[in-house]
Amino acid sequence: FVLVLCAGITIPLAMLRAQSTAASPVTTAPASRSGEQTLAEPAKTTTRIIEGKIVDADGKPIVDAEVLVLRWGPHMEFEYPIEQEIVGRAQSDAVGKFLITVAEVPGEAFQTMTVARKRDVGFGYCHVTSPPRDGKMREIVLRKTGQLEGLVVDESGQPIADAQVRADLFSADYVTDTDVLGCQALDWFAARTGKDGRFVIPGVPTEFRAEFTVKAAGRA
Image (cartoon, one colour):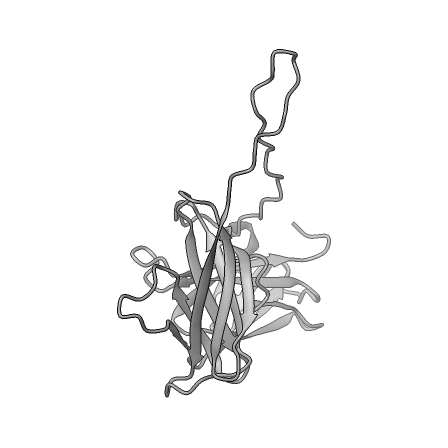
């Protein structure tokens, strides 16, 4: 079946790569002299505090914004779908501030991004690096968003109801820019089709382009 966007672009589903569901292999230590095998010791972790402030385009604090920390890596490769995971979450307080503690493994160079949204206000994000050199609190500005609309049909053009549609978002110049939102656990940019095969995904940042994954019962 195919995905038809409101702009008139048709994407054959055969072009969309299937998501991998293979389980991660278990790492074991070398066998002892007695022939027994033991599990390798888990890597030691440390904690990191990520804090900041959520504001609107005028710099006013946003209360009760949803804030998530996403991580992926260790090497940034634009393979589809992107393997991001949610490693922390919080809500902004009465003055727009948030604080999230995440676990880290020393020496592992993962990419980390903080994303935030509030319905009817907007969406914002920033990459998590070292604390700002000027000592000021990191600010995430929520900017107005748009929405994605489309239609999922089969090969004969008939609409497909109750199909799962998820958008992975890439910055417009993703060849030189690493801004990407492709977390399978993040349902902010997902929807199901109605009886007419149509779907709407609201709250999408306008500076990103979208690539879609579509699933429907009984269909490849």
